[in-house]
Image 1 (cartoon, rainbow, N blue to C red):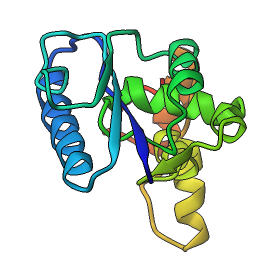
Image 2: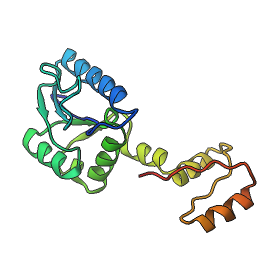
Image 3: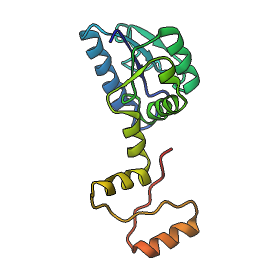
Length: 167
């Protein structure tokens, strides 16, 4: 590896900015220690990872597929790290992968694979994967309306936990 693109977390989000700023800055330092060039995309100027000397190149642009593809075209990284930018980076990386952008430019996803990210982010896919093992999981239903949610709750039995889907 000669150059790696790191997706930052983007705009500040309560409870998210600090942890991803810290982990991202540590990833950038590790790349530097290994002699690997680093490119960071993070529109938030008030982070450690965007400080001078942390990344070799910093782009203060939104972490979106459009801007990240433009950076990939210009910088030609060998690899990309998706795990240091929270949901914003995971969503962006997944979309780049599904649209063939990473393959088009020969960019390897480093760390957790996009397939694994998709399986763990989508609750239905995750349960189906665990069923293949077989791994016992709590009964669950994906619903799209209050009526469906109440029906599922009656079927499962109370108490129930309600969580939003992968977004």
